[in-house]
Length: 331
Image (cartoon, rainbow, N blue to C red; front, side):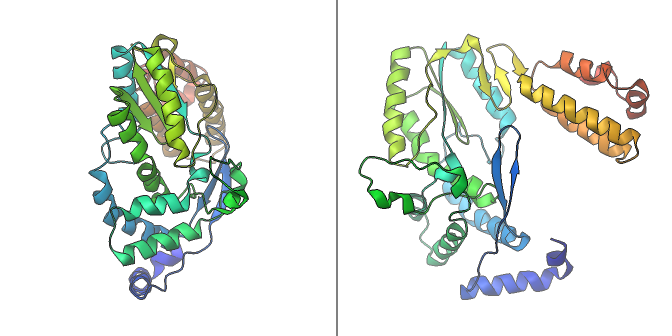
C-alpha cells in the first residue's frame, strides 16, 4: 500500500493504461487463516488489485442493486448486521416458526461458469466482462483446500475440475456472493411466497406459521440450490422462534437478544490481554479505549448490560478510571 501511494498518480495512470489495453494481470494473493468465529481461509489481493476491484464494483453495483430484494442485508449500503438483526427480531414477533439454513462452504463452492452466466445477463460491455474474467481466473484454486467435492445430478468425473471459489478478502467476492444468491432470494419470495425472509451472506432465515410448508420449502430450496452447485448443512428443521435464533453473533428472541456465549468469552479474553498490554505500556490509552468503544457499540444491539458490567468489574479500577468508564458505559 505504501509503495502504491508513494507514486499514486503514476500508479493510477499505469493501471488505467493496462485496463484500456487489456494487459492488466492481477497479482498473487496473500493467504492466512482467521479463527473468529470459525476457521476461515482469507486471501488478500495486492493493494493495486483492490483499487481495481473497487472501481469495478462502483461500475456494476448499480446495475444489480436494483434487482436485489429488500431483505438481503450483507455488503450493501444502508443494510448491514444491525439492520439484519432488527429485521430478524421483527419477523420473530410476527411468526411462530423459523427455518434456518446455513450454506455449506459458500465462497469455496461458487461455480465460475454459473456466476459468469448470471453476470453476463445484465452486463453487456465486453471490456467489463473481460475484467471480470481476469479477476475470476486469478482466484481459481485459491480456496481449493477449503472445499470438499460434491457431485450433483448429471455430473461426470470431470466435474471436480470445474473452476470454483471466490477468495474471501476481495470486495468483488462479497458483491458477487449477493449476485450469485439473488435468484435464490427471488425464488423464496416469488415462488415459495415466503412472507418472512432474511438473508445475510450464506445464512438464510425463512419464517412462517405452517411447519409443513417450511419443510416443503426446505426440499424445494435443496433442489433449487443444486442448480447453483450449493448445499446447506444437514439437520436444519423448522423450530419455534421462542427457542432463540442464532444469528450474526447473537441469539435472537422475539423480545430480547443475547450475545452468543462464545462471543462474550472471546472478547473477555481479548480485553484482559489488551488491559495487560496497556499496563505494560505496549498500547496507548486511546487504543484501549477504542477497542472498548467498538465492542460496546456492537453490544448495545443486544441485552448485554450485565456482561459489560461484569467485564468492567474485573478490570483494575485505575484503568477504568483512566479510561473514563463506569457502569453507565454499560447501559
